[in-house]
Length: 582
Image 1 (cartoon, rainbow, N blue to C red):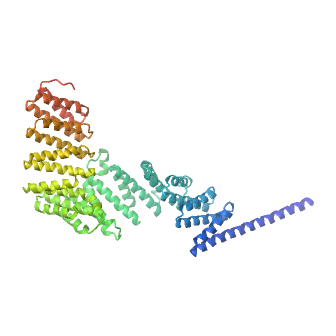
Image 2: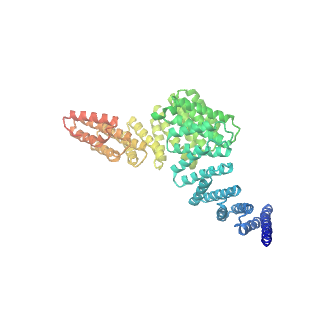
Image 3: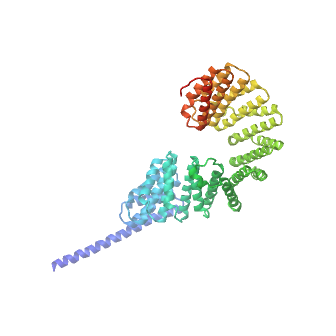
């Protein structure tokens, strides 16, 4: 009997204890919720500091409790506290608060708390990214991907997709472009089949990033493949941002099909049988989409102008010059009032294209007027814009001078070339200096045509002295060509020892160039020199040049052009009745 009484007493006391415990827990939950609601009320009344006091109290007093309801309340309070700190620009405090939440509950298996921990890590990583604390941000993002990467809850999937994209931003900023590209590919592989609009947008951005990466690397085939994939996946997506991406991809596709000249054999199926016609159709598709759009996006005029210019250039290449001229006028009329530098350049290019077409049609007076229009409109534009227009200005100067030469106005033609060289000869822009190199060569040619031989030699000399210091292969090619042309003129003028000095420059400045076009030019120039020496009965000197050809170009004989030069040189050597070992 006594044992039964003890047992009943134990059960009774246990029940009382459990009741007291649960009553205490409920009271604690109510007190915690009251603190949370108090914080919310302070926020509502625009008292953020008092609100943070309540939220801080929650974490300090209840942070280590195992009650799931209390844990949810504390998590809410910490998230809200970090949000307030962020709004107050206390980024360090916000980061610490998110870290506190993560450390308290990262092991929880409660779905709501797990989500709050993920959100804390996500927000923490984004703040660190904004502060360019890349290593710390990557730690936060990596934790999210490894812990939540397989979660199928849509809010988590959105978070993971954005986190992966943010990782690519960090990797690109720190120079790890290939790793960033791999993560973009992972995003596409992981989320491309999802119908959720947020996931589709992030995936679209990753495909765009992959395409842009390939374009920057001039990997045209892969870029075209990515653009085609984007167009196929998103051609009817209603999202305004994706619609803009679609237009960009159509432009990428059109420009690649239009501009790429050398198509590898294994990519010919990708480019199709008639890339130019495919580009033309794509430009038309772009124009149709823009004309049907009610979107006021500020980039649409640029997309339209570049599509019209591309269409103009293709039609000109197909000899539909009438339509091409109409489109040039349309570009000028529709877009000349825009101040956007990119559109301003398209308008300038349209004018240049118009002038070039008129020149080809031998409508020289009209072409000359358009070149004048370009120079009057753009040569005095503000420096920041002029940087994008310099190449067009230089071409206008050169082409105008060529027209003047055709019209027997050599004095004025030379003045245009002198002016443009004076304006730009000191430029450090390698691409721009290439255009100036063309001006030098054109000027020397006009001087020769006008029998101003000494002036032509001076023009070549001035250009040669600079060209070999440049890195642009096209400029270096022109530099080597200038030496050969100068030597040819010196031979005609019987300049004696100066001729050898000029040919020595060819060897000294360019013999180590690995560019095959420059090698071919030098080989051809040296052979022509040796042949002239032989014909002028200067066999010994010719023999030295022949020996130089064999010495310098034997290693390049796999190139068919150079192999032919070596064969001809060998024949010339035999004609000299000498034996030269290879």
